[in-house]
Length: 392
Image (cartoon, rainbow, N blue to C red; front, side, top):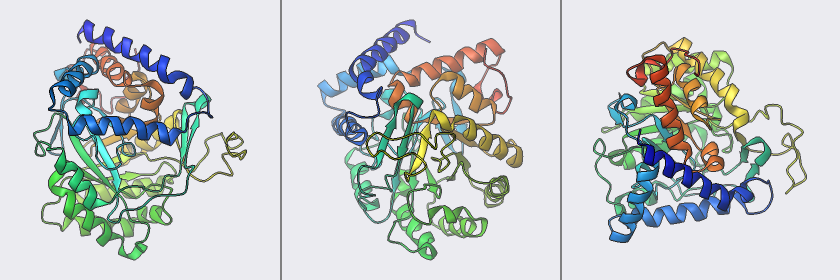
């Protein structure tokens, strides 16, 4: 790892803390959704104009601070080559507007979406809340996105390299349109995937968001098998993964692990946001005066770390070592990422922790993983997957 890059990322972290720290340190104040929209709007313009000399120079400077290169962290999984195991989770870049530059922020992969066949506004605002003291968030966004047709146009405008030739792997996360009845869900997902498959390195079946009525019913083994079989019939189906909820019982987790093996799924992503309040039931939101037990939505961030780890361990125990797993939920440090890899994740994703910690989180995690490989005498990150090695 380059010392200069590490020092510059520390400077970036300090700048982020100085500019946004005061806003992120309290529940109230700047609207959480509006802050995200402003940041994404800037990233979208940068992605669209990344070949312009001025923008290119700015992105090169960002990349020199945030990207880390270590061959020991590279992996080939389900036909994709990952330059490093840290990805951006779905939910931030809902329409893929910044797809061309996520690698410049240090990510080895980014998951776009969730995208639905029909454009939809999502749930009424406010629908995203900071829980600053807990480094957490509550969201009930409701798959707000411009729809699959608009997403395809946005991706094509960015002139992306073809799948398999990109500096960062791009996954597309797909959900059911709210207006589509549950029994028609397979065709709804299939319409989106058929349109977007040529642009995706991999695709994710999102059946675990708590914010679309009835969606989690699709985690039922029979319904999920029907959905997977429908998507697998598409002529150019990319590697398919499924994203599951943290609130599943052990039997349901085991059933999904078996289904993934039987249906030849490329992997499982564990986990989505939680309807469980994880000990924060009486935590009150200043904006509404209501407790978390009274508010709708999914909980993410640091409080989810323990449960996400439990689900991942259960998946690994049932599925065995061959099925790739992606760990997400409460990962806000190199130690948390190493813990998830030790439990069986080949890749990890960040979102809420990335918002709180800032862009320097990604290089911090990558440096930490490389250091752990050295301290444990390992030559490659794959040797650490499922090994349960302690943080040193």
